[in-house]
Image (cartoon, rainbow, N blue to C red; front, side):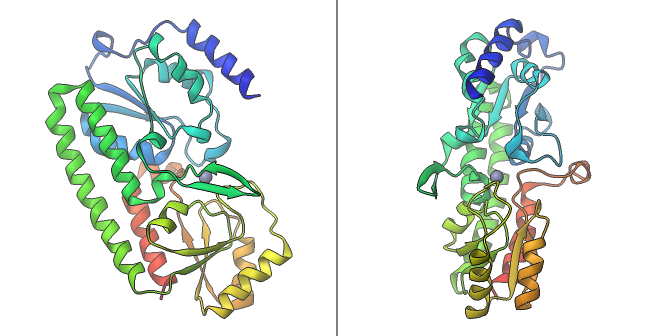
Length: 300
Ligand SMILES: [Zn+2]
């Protein structure tokens, strides 16, 4: 399937005439940036400000993992100056595009290449966990890489991008310090009645987690053994919150909450936001601030 997709993409790339997004063809002289998922979109906007047009390929409210680019998406990418994606197994189709990078003038940045990654073990198969943005430190690495690239591509606005990076990076530092303080002297066990896309956050702050499924596994029916294990953990460790993610149907969280009296709280994985949230201009920092508040309650 992937081979076929790559093949189709190569044809599309060959057929679409070379990148039109650069220099004189960008009427207002603004850089055109295309990103795949929400955190990258928000990071690019925070750094580029009004000096670039930033576009997000993943439609709002859509599940990030089943996304594959449409022909229009490929055209958008080819017409952009910079295309930012996660890369690795998160976006297997990017490889096909990258091979053709020399043919178009679009710069391609895969965020997975600018952070320290964690391998995930699922049934003895190791793969790189792709939810790199869930740790504020990784977010800092990513915005730094974006700022450096923009400064190279648009040197007349170098100072502007660097200033934005500094401001944003200070905000991320503050968030990081808050998480540090919260997790320093606390019971660090959390229970997730869900998938667990927060491995980087957990690793960063030494959170010990118990989840129904690893990573963003597509499994949806936990075994009876898993359910009773999560319930036992909550009872034995006197845990007062059971977490779920924003895409959850919350059935398992309801069951566990019913059995233990633990309060249900959401941690937002930031993969994707709703149309309404996007219109309101929600940011990664806001979502992470809410996560901080939930975690604070869960670690009491
Ligand atoms: Zn995921």
